[in-house]
Length: 120
Image (cartoon, rainbow, N blue to C red; front, side, top):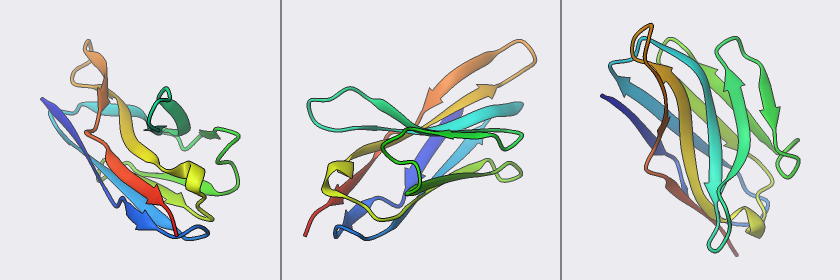
């Protein structure tokens, strides 16, 4: 069984910063990629940033230059550094991972989400 647990969300003023963390645990053979999504009320879940095991990254246009994704392969962690936060960044943020639990078994896993609220 695989678990993803996010932490680091909270309330921050516009222009502020937050760092989200996500820890993967359980029967993990390998992690191919990890990413961060968010979902605001009444909107679809959107991909913000993703990183592969080799370190390749990609970002949504709305967060490029403000958010940075990083991965600690050894500790099965992924981080999202969020700077210059705006009220429109308010959402529930989810961690996602492409994980093999064996050579033959590869699945997508999600964390439970962490709330980020940007407000003065």
